[in-house]
Image (cartoon, rainbow, N blue to C red):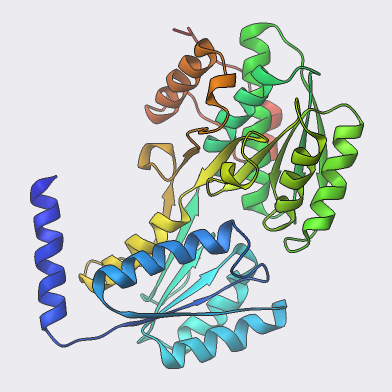
Length: 341
């Protein structure tokens, strides 16, 4: 580890004294900065890398899908590295990137097609289902009403992978502990309107759910607000970044997706000359997904449940427990033989 750190510092020093300069521009999806989620997390990694390397960085807000192509094109004219944030930007990215072969493009939640001929694009995907599995298991353990909720944004693949994992975690807990937990599901079909998330969460709480997991971008901020308003005994589960702080004691945990790590690593790889085009997939084994430390709620969780979560996390890491990543896989999912500690 010390040798690796020394090499990084040495390479960064060489990069700095060489007189070269890089500029980074992040193009947000419609949620934009301030979503306290996906965009903010990606930006955090860019800022950290930019400050570490001493390079310029900026952000461009998209207000509608029609902004994606012009925003990416303009950014590519001005910057050396352009980030396209969000699955909905996929088509725009691969229309723009071939026009700027000298610019590096980084897609977050975007896979690089196998037939893409350029060598200037890297896409980062995440095994969202693995982190969501853990929070689903926890939700099943902690629910008192035996009814939990899921609020998604637009049902695109990354959102749905959160749901698949959440439901698989609940199913495993049911099987191991003989408990039956029902699930309410709803979608805002939006990522930007907290009021929609709040309305859906309030409706699920009214139906009897006491824990609601959101994968809805800024709409999820409303889910957290709803849990806080309902008060004691009601919880939200956050997403993408550690959202526990947003309503201390009302956010049971957060399913974390390390978009900050992806953006940081991408910039460093370009600066240090180790960039590799193609698709990279980050999961629990890469510390690319997981769950929050539960700073405000850990004392509420029985020690046995915490131990089980640690055990299951290791089972996923070593490949003994595969979490479904499609609806078909979820439908066919059979709980394996698991000997809890």
